[in-house]
Image 1: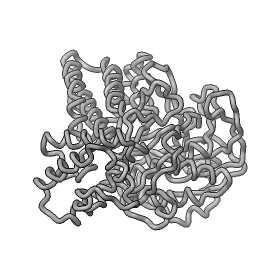
Image 2: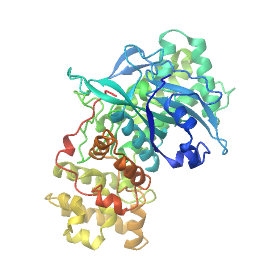
Image 3: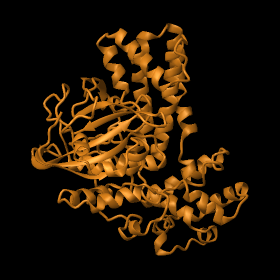
Image 4: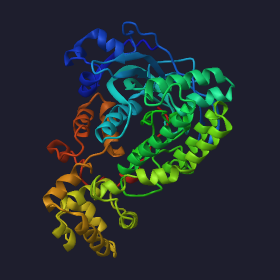
Length: 484
């Protein structure tokens, strides 16, 4: 564990404090609490440990990995009966740090702190974040792996998840032949987190695999619906509970581009946003390989058939459709796929903003959409309308709406605005907040906290900050380092 001599608690998410940890806001004034969330002191009863796992990284087996800068403090059961595993990230060396120092810096910590909560309020399954603590002690990093080492400040995030087990947790046990431990771990995960699966069911591992496959497809569809690219979809970053965690070089798309890659280290675009569904299939193949020693030949055949059904399951789960109208109505006809594909092609050709195109379709009246004349505030639709086939798509879209709409245009707008966010954590917004935070100005981190907790609601401060305005010209080229 890390024992910081100079540290400050700068930011806390009140929703996590109150509704997960059952704590009052006044606790953040308590020096003992601040020491605990910084890694300077243990919570009562805590016995820190680090998790050993392996993983396939960029398609290749990387061997034993493990928590290199995270300490699991323990499990907390709140008043609602929910059990949460509490972890510090950036809290110092562990047995799996290898040559690393176990630290994290402001840059990466602000991003994880903000994005985990942003994803939660977007409705995407995710780990959660309680606090951001910053140290004055120096941490040396080479952000872009080009030999330019710089001094940065350390930071610690307290994060929570129902479980931190991942595909790589099972892979390492199969690879090393620890099959008794593999069976014990799987039985524990099923008993604790897949309670509908009978512990005495002889096919429980097949059912488990099916459940993980379905929920992984659902998770990636969620990512795609909000334009989120994880950036490092290795098997050691893929949760067995199908939640988003290990926020590193992620990014939300600006202009729609299926080849969008937020990670500077991903030169070949393996983890581009458009490749995430296929990467999910690869990772599930590796999960099945890890389970194979525990399966009979019949069970293996069943599981392989389940794996072959993944593309269809993903297509059914895909949330691109919900972004155009809503969860209930669009998606009931085969023609809807063409409406969506047509729109995405227009967006790709014109470089239309992903988030705001869908949002502004939620805000514009149908009569204004048909006329194709947009006010400056509808800048994303204005960009889209420059395409020569824009009016063709509008007519197709309006015809589709006319067959399903049984309510007013105002009700349609209200319904659509409830599923199409106005604000996401764009990289340029995070970068602006980080630059200020590195100078001890946490005003923008605080503003983003407030904004991202209500991403579907127009907010005056967020509008003044330009969070729904056309992004700066350099935003599309902004990519993120893996170094943290």
